[in-house]
Image 1 (tube, rainbow, N blue to C red):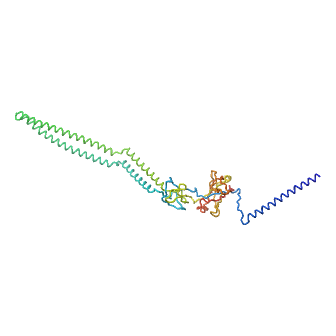
Image 2: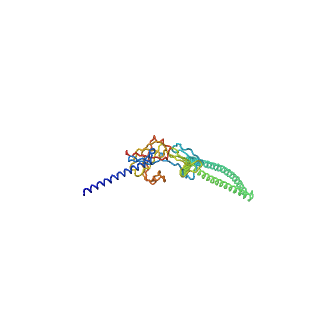
Length: 399
C-alpha cells in the first residue's frame, strides 16, 4: 500500500513538470508572435553589442591644440578698424589679422619717440667729445677777445693821458723853478711864485690820478679776463656728471620707444601660431567681442577627436591604441582612423551628451577625455568639420 502511494506521488510530480514546460513554451511562442508583429522584417533594429575588446564613446572633432580664440587686451574698450583675413584663410605665426582703431596715432607717437632717441644719442656723443657746448664756448671766446681788446684800448688811452700829464709836469716844474729864481732876485711877486707852484702841484696830482686809473682799469679788466677764461675752461672740459645725465636721458628716450612699440602692438591683432581662420566673431567698426574674441583659429592640418570615455572603461584605454571614428549624424561618410595620443588626468561630467529630453542620456555621466590623433590621410577629410560630434570606437584588445 505504501509503495503504491509513492508511485502515485512521483507520477503527479512529473505531470506538473511537463505542464510547466508546456506552458513556458506556449508563452515563448506567443511572445515571439507579438514581437514579430511589432518588428516587421523590412525594418530590423540596428543594435551594437559592446564587447570587452572595444570601448565606444561619444566625441567631437577639434584641430591640434583645440580652437584658439584670438582677442586683445581691454577688448571692451577696443574697436576693429580693419580685418585683414577671411574665414578659411591660412595664416602664419605672428601674422597680423586685424587692426584696431588708434593705430595711426600710435605709429606717429612711435616715430616721435624714435626721433627723440636720435637727438639724445647725438647729445651724448657731443658731450663725450666735448662738442656739446660749442655755442657757449664760442660766445665765451668772443667775450674774452672783447675784454682783451678793451684792455689794450684803455691801457693805451690811460698811458697817453699819463704821458700828457708827465709833459704838463715838466712844463710846470720848469716854470716853477724859473719863478723861484726870479723870486730870489725880487723880479716877481710872491703871488706869481705861488701860482707857479700850484700849477706844478696840480700837474703832479693829475699824473698820480691817471696812473691810478690805469692801474684800476688794468686790474679790473684782467680780473674779468681771468674769470671768463676760467668759464671757458669749464665749458671745454667733459664732466662725468654731464655724461651720466646724457646717458640717463638717452635711456629714458629708449624706454619711451619701447612703450610706444607696445602701444602700437596693442593696436595690431596677431595670431600666436600658424593655422586656419575658422570663424570671424567681430566685424569692422564693431567693439571686440569680449566672449568670443575677434576670430577663432585652428591648426586644421592635424585633426583630433576628443572622446568622452566612461570612467568605468578608462582603465582599458592605453596610449597608441587604434580607434575608428565615424560621424554621429552623417556629417561625413565612412570611417576615419586614428590612435590614442593622450589620456586625460581628470574625471568630469560629459559635455557632449546633454540632451535633457532624451531619457536614455545620462547628463551626469562621469567621463575622461581621451585625445585621438587622426591619421594624416584622414585629416584632410574632416579638416573643415571642427566641432562635429562623432562616435569613437577604441580597440582595446591589442593592449
